[in-house]
Length: 112
Image 1 (tube, rainbow, N blue to C red):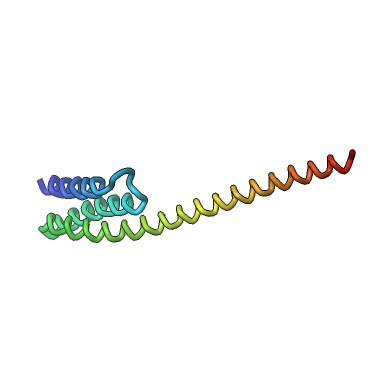
Image 2: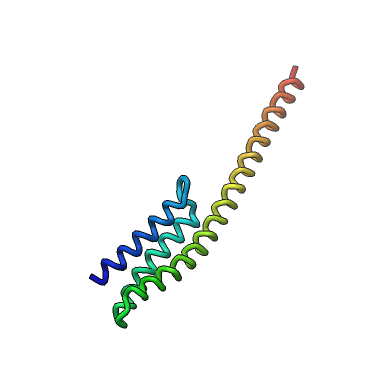
């Protein structure tokens, strides 16, 4: 019966995170949800050992939510950096291709 409360809290937390999002979840939101569920589960288990599974799940869920959001935020920042770097690489490659075509065109003009 104690674990049903932990599962219910986890489902409610995940539902609230998913419900707040208009579309797909961001990496930050995914991290927060995973952290909240993991924290609630761990807190419920620890709380059950000391006789307060509900309080343990609530505290663990809140701490897990914060920690998961921080980790998710860092991961989202890394994804944004990688996206920008790939955009720059693609732009550089397009410029190299253009210059190669121009160079080849100039070589052909010099031969005639």
